[in-house]
Image (cartoon, rainbow, N blue to C red):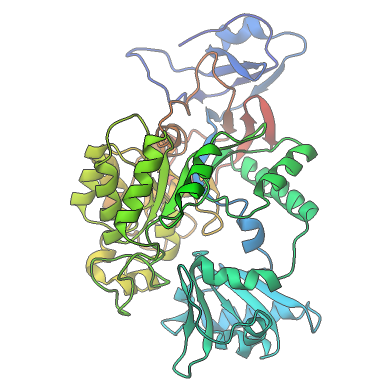
Length: 540
């Protein structure tokens, strides 16, 4: 392993092991020390190798833990979450009774005219009951203005008072999504997909720019405390995102580097697509616009995924965002311009259509990827690998929201045959495809070490009583570490995510060796220090 490049280091960490996640020559000694100066790695080797770099001003940290490359969350929504995660967190509710109790408790702190906002509601807790605002009215009364987003962030429930304030009293012709209408011809309060949810935005309580800046800095600091140094932000919807990020950097450096991919739909006209192409590379000190994000379908629980055959409710039968021909034309336009794409695809028909489009593109070095891949046949996964398509998946979507016995909304919707293909991470890697891992926050928590543990166990690491979901799809310790380090870089067509002499000093110090401890111990491990390009973003 490389020793040092001369000069005096600002920081030296001596650990039990340094996992560089780079290529290793046979017989090469495992490094145990790393030195940093000027935001770069200037020493990498044994403790004796970095000793010449230690001067009177060098900070030296010694630990029994390990050093690994800092983590990249390959799919999260930290900016969109600023509006989505307001109010009471309902993600822990597992029954209608518990939900009603949480809503009533939250209301006890409100004035009569205040809004009740909530987020993270998993429809599994409704035990098969229809998703309507009746559950809000029973807990809060019919006069309360209330708005609750479901955990998938693709749907919401609004009370009658909220609907009235927004002027919603019947169906609307929307580009995508819908206002669900009951048998009585009135809205049920269930809003499906983003265009329907957007109808409530003008009447919801407003967040000021200073509030959003403070919230963003707070959130990114929490992410850095989990060892995250970069996030692939798969959204850039709000008109004020650039203003927000510029204001945030005026207030101080971002704890996490952000790579933003604006949303794009096949229905956009040529001028709008050209604007997205021209906007590539826009950025600040620690954020940058790169790539675009497409949707081919919605979610299983919302009945908006794209399946080969209908789900158990007779839904999920098509794409919400137009025909595949339009999608293929737009993807080809970005491909020719050198712009990588990421496509949200959840149902087996949607995934297959996206794979066929991407596999047919001429080779020009642009790396495209598919997000989520919740249920699809092994033959399509093999086609992904053969075509060099990257796959971005979120292990805790499986371990937090599905059950081995199929007693959850996702599995009930799909039926046993499709549920038996849940988040096949093992098959994806074995196909030769690049695999990047992430959280999809705020859909699921961004606690990386717990996500890694779940991906190894195929169950929640916090609850050993839960049976694993398809345990043959489990990943190894090294594979999950790669999924949060080198995998996200490869998924956007770049090298990196490893530690090497002269490279960026972007690493975390853990109190355990993640490649040596059982998954259960990894789930309780601590991040002692996070360094991002030499910037200390977290220290326990």
